[in-house]
Image (cartoon, rainbow, N blue to C red; front, side):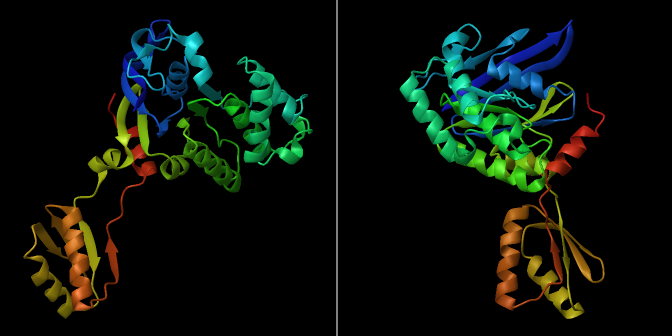
Length: 316
C-alpha cells in the first residue's frame, strides 16, 4: 500500500532549485534508501517528506491508515505529524536530562496520555537495551548509546513512518551494524523507514528500495535489482584449467543463445543474449560434466560502484 507520494516536487531557495521534478512513491513496509553526494538535496528531500518544509511546486501526499484517500501532507500536517518520527543527523537529545527524562520529554510533545507513554517508554528501553542506563544523563552515554536513545525518542509515539538522516555517521563498523540491526527490527514491527546515508554498504544491506539523487534530480529509483539492471555486465569470464576442457565448454555453450565467445587462451569471455538463463545452463553443464573452473567472474555491481558511475558522469 502506498504511504507517501511525491508528485512533480520542486524546491527552491532564493529562486535556486535544490530539487527538481521529483516523483517518488514510498510504500508501507519499505526500507527506502536515499543516496547522493553532499549538497545533492538528500536532506531537503527528507524535510519535505517529514513535512518540515513545503515544496515550491508539486505536492507531497500521505495515505492515512486503512484509507485509499490521499491527503496533502502540508495542509493536514497537524493531523499527520503524529504518524511521523524523525531522527536528524546530529543528536537532538538534551544532554543534561537522563535517558528516561528525554523519552518523557519527546513523548509529551505528542500529547500521549501518561499511562500509554509510560508503557511505550518501558518497551523502548527494553527494545533498545537502554533499560540499565535509564537514569544516566544523555551526555554520559557512548556514541552508540546516544544513537539508540535518539532513535528511541523518534519512536516513542509509535509512528508509521520513521525518517533518518545519516543514522550511522561517526560510528565505527560494529556500532553501525548494531544500529542497522535495530532498524531492521523496527521495520519488522510494521514501521516504514526512509534513510539518507553516505554508508552505501549499509544502505545495500538494509534497504529494499533506493533513490539516487544527482544534481537535484532523482537519477534512479526503485527496487535495488531494478536500479542495478542498467549496470549489469553484458558478459562474463570463465578461466579454464586445460585446452580440452576449454574446447568441451565451447562446444556445449554453442547450443545456448550466445552472441559471441572470445577465446583468450586460458579464459573464455562469454556474451550471452540472456545472462541469467545462460548462467543457469552453465551451472548445469558444470555439474553434469563434473568440471573444475579456476574462476567465474559474474559479479553484480555494488551500489557504491553504481553511485560512483552516476556521480562522476557529466550528466546534469
